[in-house]
Amino acid sequence: MGRGKIEIRRIDNSTSRQVTFSKRRNGLLKKAKELAILCDAEVGVIVFSSTGKLYDLASSSMKSVIERYQKTKEEHNNVLGNPTSEVKFWQREAAMLKQQLQSLQENHRQMMGEELSGLGIKDLQNLETQLEMSLRGVRMKKDQVLVDQVQELNRKGNLIHQENVELYKKVTLLRKENVELHKKVYGAREANRNSLLINGLTIQEDSDVPVRLQLSQPQDEDRRDLTPPRTTKLGLQLH
Image 1 (cartoon, rainbow, N blue to C red):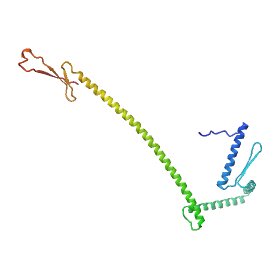
Image 2 (image 1 turned 180 degrees about the vertical axis):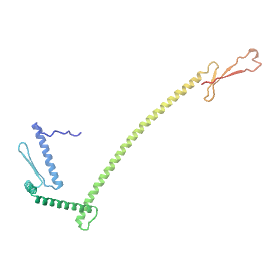
Image 3 (image 1 turned 30 degrees about the vertical axis):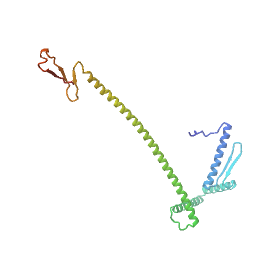
Image 4 (image 1 turned 60 degrees about the vertical axis):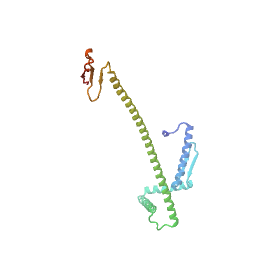
C-alpha cells in the first residue's frame, strides 16, 4: 500500500519537523551525488537548517561551483541586455547542439557497424564491449518478457482447467438427476401396469397397439363337456 500524499506546508511540531528535515536533507544530498556521478554533471548543493547549521555537497569543490555559477550568471545577464551578444550566444548554443548531434549520429552509425575505418584497436574493443552489454541487456529483457508471457499463459490454463472441472461436475450431477428421473417415470409406469391385473381381468399394454380386454364367458354346466368354451373378446382403445 503506497504512502498517502502530505500537505506541503510548514510542520508545526518541532520534533516531526526536525525528523523530516533530516530525512529529506539526506535524500537531497544523495540524489545530487548520484546526478553528478551518473551524468558527469557539476553539482553544488547548499542547505541551511532553521537553526542556521550548514550542510553542503559539491561534485568538485564548492568554491569552483560558485565561481562558475557567478560567471555564467553574469554572462547570461549581459546577453539579455545586449541584442548583439544575445545573437552570438544563441549562435554558439546552436553550433554546440549541432556538434552534439553529429557526434550522436556518428556513434549510432558505429553501433550499427558502419564507418569503422577510422577506429583503432582500442576504439573497436570499446565498441565491442558496448555492443555486448547492449545485447546482454536486450536478451535479458526478452527472456523476462517470455517468462512473463509463459506465466500468464499458465495462469489462464489453470483457470480454464478449473472451469472444465466445474463443468464436468455439473454434467455429472445432471446425468445422475436424469437417471433418477428415468427410474421414477418408468418405475411408476410399471407399477400402474401391474395394478390392472385384477380378478382375471387382463389388459395387455403396448405402445403401438390398442389395449384389448379379454373376458372369459361362463359355460352351462350341461354343455361343459360337449362343446369347447367360447370367449368373447372386447376391444378397448385407451387414450
